[in-house]
Length: 164
Image (cartoon, rainbow, N blue to C red; front, top):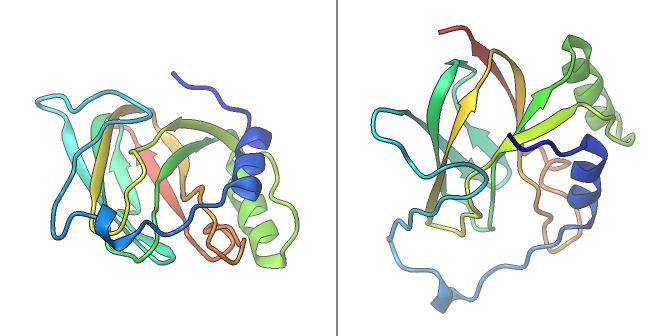
C-alpha cells in the first residue's frame, strides 16, 4: 500500500506543470491502457469508469469496498490523472473543501492509495486497487499552462466507499 504524506501531495500539486502534448503525439480515437499506481487489471475485478474533463470528474458518488479496476477516460483538452486520496478523518473533507473555496492552503487530509497513469486527451488509463470503506477524494495533480492546479479549478471529487 502506498503511503504518501498529504503535505507531499500538496507540494506536487503546487509545483506540477504539464504542457499540452503535440497533436502528433496523441493517437486519434485510440484507447491506450496503461497501469500505474496500483496493479494491472485483474480478471474478476469490478471496473469503475471515470471520465476526466477540463476541469471535473464524472464519477460515482459511492462505491462498494474491495478490489476495483479504476478506468479513467480523458475527454478534456489537457492531460489528467485521478489520484485516490483516502481521508484520515470525517472532518478532513469539510476542511479540505472550505480551504479550496476560500483560496487558503489545503490542509493535510489523507494519503494517496493509487492512481491510473497520466491520460492525455482521448486516452484511457487504468489501475487496480483495493479500496477500504471510508471517504476518498479524486484529485488531478496537474497544473494548467497558466500555473493553476486542476484541483483549484475544481477537478476534485468526493467519493464514499461503503462496505461490500
